[in-house]
Image (tube, rainbow, N blue to C red; front, side, top):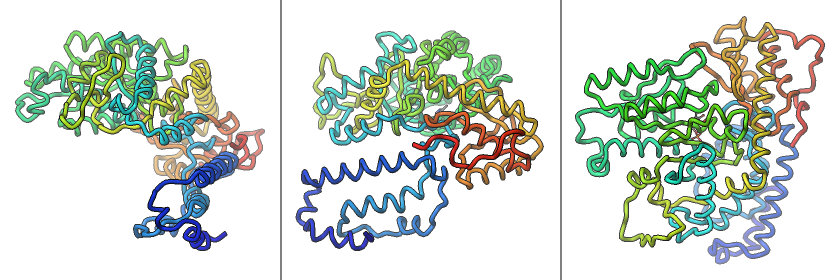
Length: 505
Ligand SMILES: Cc1ncc(COP(=O)(O)O)c(C=O)c1O
């Protein structure tokens, strides 16, 4: 039925007064649930056949941008029809088997359901009185993560919107530990000696953002060189700290990586932790990408030193495969969070409880939703063993792509494959031509890879975090990239129809 007819129908079904309730009757609830259920089924069923990146309908996008605020409402059927005809065809299908550009997984089965339930319960998880059970759930998942890295009973933390917010909170605690009692009163206004933050050249730009927001300034963020394995060089760290001290500055914190954003490298965390202890510096580990791979025995030993950090960020919306958004920050000592964020106000009567926590004292937000539910359900429904298997499967797919890139002369690997991502380029093509191949690949809708800059070389990057990707997808992508670069498909393998490598859905 055309949208305008449906639109007219709405006003016969529901008068303006009923609309003003902003609530649904039982029948409308059922109808909304049915429309949602049918959408989810259709969407998952057709995922593999869709172009990963849409052929954008500019007219539809402009229509969204130009619509005036509606005075009268539209019926649900119209909204769901627009979802099918406007939103879905103009969306990037991040759960498509060949969506591999960033550290962005396809969501697991349970988390969208948890998200819907959390919306219905609408707990405010920053005041325990407004979310008692949710409060226990959040404490439990934070505790599980703290245990994974061997943090002690003093540890604390909270669920955040993602790794960037977790990094910001960790670095706020670091800054305020260094500034002591003046942190709240003076901020950085009274200081002569600037605070300095150290990290590697491979670090994610959320650390630059945090340095900016916290008033440290990127002039006081030292991005130091890495070794050949993309790991922060300790000798260069020691030199930089020493030089800053000699020049009257105040080194306060080092950010180490548990999974650098481009190549997945893990900094020498144990050595950096020992250096920080000796120098009286806070150690924050950005584990947004890689820390949760400690759920797998294969990666746990390399990550165990995270427990020596003062704070760490990790991202359930990465290796727990929850839908957006869910990050987490952990601190070795929960009092550091309270020192940074505990501001009492007379209009919030914060009754203390022996078991439950007011998370408002632990982070920057006041209202904060029940993101912990999808984290809790993901772990309780699938269990740690399933995660270990999936994480290893992702790394095996990366190894498969890396082997193809090494074996076929038209490719050149730009970095060893140490985790679940692969950086490579077409060896005989220059940067411009490699960029053009990547753009053509993405525009074609066959696959979505990202760009990578590795030691000054431009390349393509695939990051395996997609639950539907198969080895056949990997082979198809490599054949297609070779073809776009002017090479034949690999001898003995016929080109297959583009959308059939993975089972749909
Ligand atoms: C190493 C690293 N740190 C931080 C972030 C930021 O995390 P988020 O996107 O959850 O804010 C990312 C995102 O990919 C990352 O890879």
